[in-house]
Length: 297
Length: 273
Image (cartoon, rainbow over all chains, first blue to last red; front, side):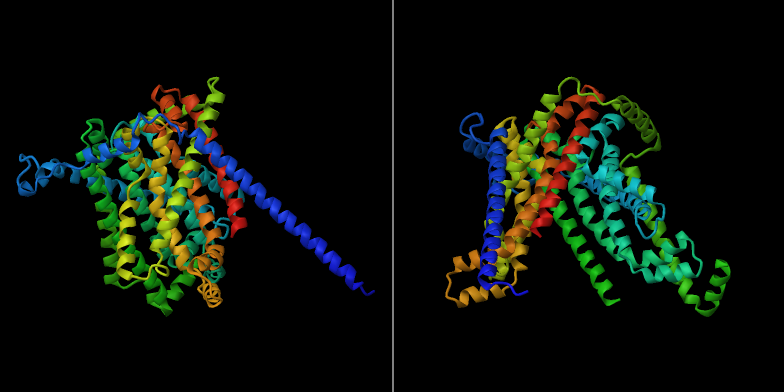
């Protein structure tokens, strides 16, 4: 049964044309949806033509101008009573440093607590370790629900319940850390080499022994790396949560805004950015060492 | 059974099951030290068990008041706020992607070949990466007044350094061979970008932007709290007057919206990959 060559060519042309048409309508449809979304979004968010109170650029300039302190070069190193000195700009530095350290402590504690809970949850929902499927399913869905909850909303509710202070901040961050690390850890758990597990099972080991000697040695470096990344995120989160009353340096930031001390705001902001920057550098160095060690082994 | 095997294994290879004494002492003292540090941190932060119990009590009351969730007859208003939040997230992401594109090109090692310039630019972006959207929002709202405009710009400003970094990494990870081929055919640098780089990076960039859209939709609620409008504003209002049944309704609707967007964006990203 040989096919007629001209017929085959026509068939090919027909297929090619329909494929092209399909591709182009899909592209056009995608573009249409995208542009409609774009127009509606900018319109709904009143991006253009919003009443910005006239001369918005001038107001930004004004604002920036108020944020920059009036430092005087000749008085730069004087004490805090001299207007225009550095000490005058950072007039509450010891208090801010204390609040900043509090933020760091919040981030560390929340990361540790969240990571511990995340490890527990990850073993409960890893396919190769938890044979009971309904429990796996329940834990997985719970973690997903936690991940969709915005931190700040949790924080507002917890601040209402626990009062202003670091406690609601730590709990909020620990919960969201558990949600994200639990998922990442369970993915790591499912990718472990199954052979040590089989050997342990053959030797009659129970679930705990299997986890202790078969899984933990394999996953620990990866866990540590994720925990450190999360710690960086939690520090920024802890600083931001302070703004709704969850303690730490965010509270000072909020205070500076309420009293319209914009130069103080800039000073505290610089402290926060510097803090995050330092932690990023440290954690990056540690992570690279962890990965390096993992490669050598 | 298991204990017997363990004993035999210990007899054959003692080091396999039990670390040496100094190593164990070291490990135990490290754990003790870490625990002590944690307790000390808890003390610094006034994390007293009493306060925890009292708060849990109150939290139980709140959660009880959340059932059953109720729209309070304001379904349309809530849906509108949700749409506004999405609009802020979408507009903010688009602005951020547009601004991050040229920055990403400048930050790519393979395009700007001066290492000192590259280093300085990357560190400059790193500096701004630390500023969360909420902080930008506080600044912008006090500059522009209440309203979504400040929220959109705040989201965009928080995303730009992150997206620019990812974009420049995508550009650096490009296969150089198509570029060499296009150049060998006598193309201008612009044509090299259009025909060799863009087809490689466009899907990656689109998928990263989608990922940020998801994050922004989640974060846009944050902006309502500082006065930028949208669902966060509605929610904060309800929580402040302890209308927890309505708050729960908004939260559930919002979570459903987030899940829907995640699903759609995951589907789109799968197609792009």
